[in-house]
Image 1 (cartoon, protein in one colour):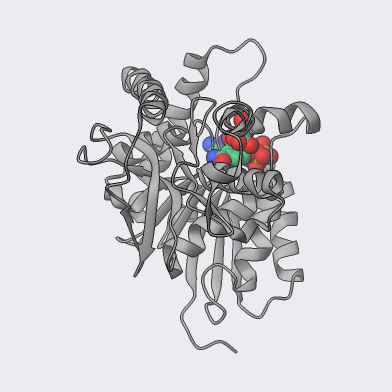
Image 2 (cartoon, rainbow, N blue to C red):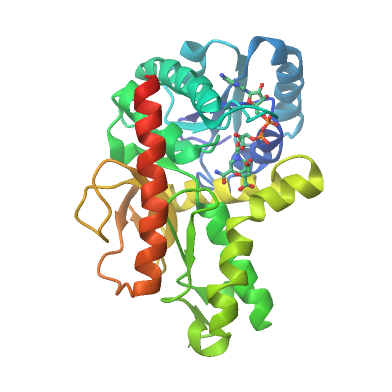
Length: 325
Ligand code: NAD
Ligand code: LMR
């Protein structure tokens, strides 16, 4: 029997498809550590309670030694009580004919009320927002919860993994031979996947792969990958999203070691010409449970223009969200 006290992990959208792929690795020890017991507090909406009870049964049936219990609830206060970590999967999806403003209005409501309930979590609760629009939902959560901004992040690791895998495939290399890719900005089609600081098998990606591909098809394919998966599957990415969530949380909790990764984090206005107060994906290193931005990378004109475009979209989204608060 493990001797450590369990960490409490709250997950919203617990009956959804990402959660279904996410819960087994969270309980396996691969994210929070091989000797770290995990208690799950799963939140979903009332109509999903029967499905959620089945998910709880399956968590038991996984029979992982680190399993320290699972609760399914529609009450955010129960879900976030004493949470050490909170992963926000549940959000309102854009439906046919809906305006961006209508979707944002729904999400402002959800993240505002979940932000209030988050007050019952542990003071140092670490939050990861995945539900779209992830960066702006994170900003709403930050303003509603009072959780320090350094403890609220959003997921751009899936985009990072997509960029890394795409370079590896094009170069005919193993994915772990690619390092230094960066996703800048919004988890949306304006994101900028940057390989100007990346290497493959120790060589600069810019010297190995053609620049017209790197500045053209590569960028647009990564930007539109989520939409391409929805078009093909009629569902959004789930296995790869769950893997990216595990990568993000593991690195945040256990550290990144030598390399750096992409995380949506709140800016302080001092780096890369990004103004303070937006949740913008940046190159980060993690150690001791804290992230820091990798500063001082040279930015050329091509990158600057792409970074500014995604920044402008985030500023606009945030203005819209604020007007609905
Ligand atoms: P899903 O529809 O399968 O599951 C979402 C779940 O959230 C559902 O069970 C739903 O009932 C629940 N939910 C809705 N409103 C809720 C609320 N107010 N409180 C608690 N639960 C609520 O969706 P999914 O495929 O699991 O994706 C979840 C979200 O993640 C979507 O917004 C999707 O667009 C987003 N996503 C983000 C990334 C990323 O990289 N940031 C990647 C993939 C998917
Ligand atoms: C993804 O990148 O796969 C998702 O964010 C797409 C989506 O809109 O759910």
